[in-house]
Length: 184
Image 1 (cartoon, rainbow, N blue to C red):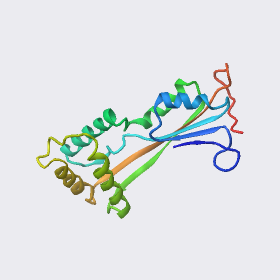
Image 2: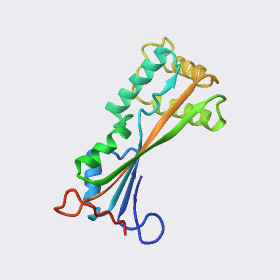
Image 3: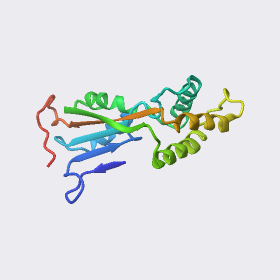
């Protein structure tokens, strides 16, 4: 999602917000070319996406890591995108870089109906179509899915995914560093 600030509604003019899946360096670099000096670029993405589960069985964690590898190489999905945001703005010489980190997922105790639906759908759709072969499970994906549900539906499970926000100000042409942030 890219939200370019407008005069009416949304963000003030000269602010660009990039949320998830577009946060690759070359995309951020190209988007920043459309930002005026003094404009603000906000990047938001998840980090260690779908990989923080305590105390999942070792085979399940190994499989989840393999699935993420497949999604990264075959589907252009970066489960570690959030940790890269600061370096993108730093390398583009942005000023006044600031960061924030919060929980996107924080799941413990009884599983809500919403989390149950969202995570089982995520596994049924994204994981099944990831290209991973589930070679460690005699029953293939179906056996993996049952192991996942047994872990994930248990009240003892603790799962979290951090969301990272990075914002910075584009420096004035030829000035580095600059104290020139002005979103209006």
